[in-house]
Image (cartoon, rainbow, N blue to C red; front, side, top):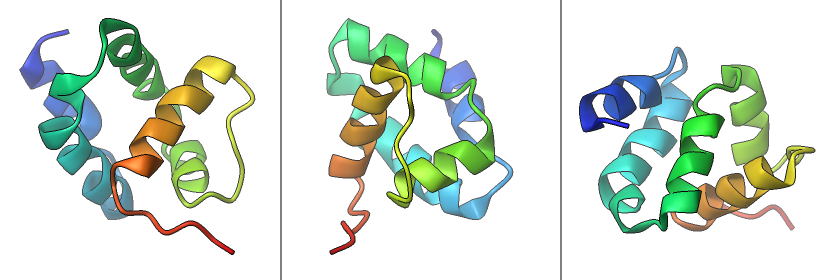
Length: 83
């Protein structure tokens, strides 16, 4: 997927998601394995509200492929883990 499309796909309707996804795209995405890059593309097809809940650790995606990329994003964006 071309970089420009990824950038615009990572810009969401919620500022909170932009603050998570854009730094991830810039700093972490380039070093991902191809399979994880493809998982990220799949993640971008999800609804903003779902992603927000996942990134805030309120629930996890039911799809194991999405769960993997959500965890990678969580681990690399400084989102605190709730006790």
